[in-house]
Length: 247
Image (cartoon, rainbow, N blue to C red; front, side, top):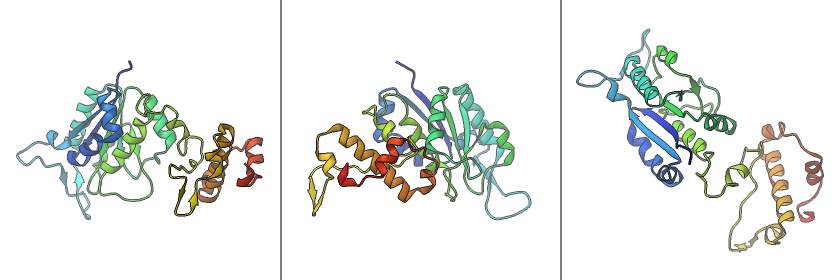
């Protein structure tokens, strides 16, 4: 059995992270020995009676900035525990996190160290001790904890054995550059709306055609930016020319 994929999250608010990491799929992945998730309180590396981790910014301005001394010490300690792991700061300056990024990170078997920023950001001198930055998108969060948990969740799902169904991670949205097809379960009719006939047919080839058609149609309608990058096969083009009742 392969060793667990190691993740360490550096944060000023461990309680924000612990509940999520211990529940559902992530909790089960740790119980199975597939994922090793550690939470480190940055304050443990701050000196003095009050363990101060922030200070006013040079040049003035609103808010506070995370001090370099405790943060760098925490990063160095984490790198000592996870030699070779990539240390990334959750930051709006970083490249956007995507499913492709998640696949890249999970291939880095040495693991991942995620640093959660707070306040107005971190002292720029911390950057020399990191391997990069990562962003969830063009919006502002109170801190990096939500972003870090999102990254861990997306990466952990790609660790072999974490998902009960080995096909789940392959068929999800964005894996092929398309949105996932809609899902249905019992009852076959709910408030007058029936499950599509193809899904009730028991014909696996027909079901596969319907799902591919629906993924293409949904992506074209709702995410034209993604659709524009999809290389349509001849089979896809023929499929798009058909109506749902013809599938």
